[in-house]
Image (cartoon, rainbow, N blue to C red; front, top):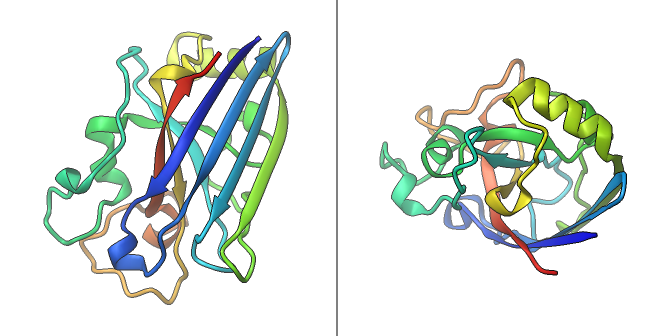
Length: 185
């Protein structure tokens, strides 16, 4: 059994009006991965995409900070996180093992900005799909970071905030919180 944890801290809080924070726990046990995420003070009544990000070559990912705001618009958008955090890898949605990322099947926060997410994932299926996408079945959770995304559609974002993924615009993909995943056992 292997256990991992991420303390999730706010990102873009000064621009979105909330300081999202929480924790994520991961337990690999035999043939399953149990994921539990609890978030507080996210934008209320909003769907929140959540994923782990990383580098396919196994380089350790770091969390984005204001230093990644390369266009100096005051927002750290999805594209700006890639230099330190890598690419989006595994979604925390209704079926993480399928690695289907752009859709509307992610948690929605309540009126207080709270949500919790728990999913037991078949590890063999996830590893097989991860290998197809990234060339290795080793998830290397301790080299990944977790991002929580999503702000209300009525939040005024400058045109410089990038993050269009298919039909989903920067309101869906804007990072609101981030945490480094660390092995704890």
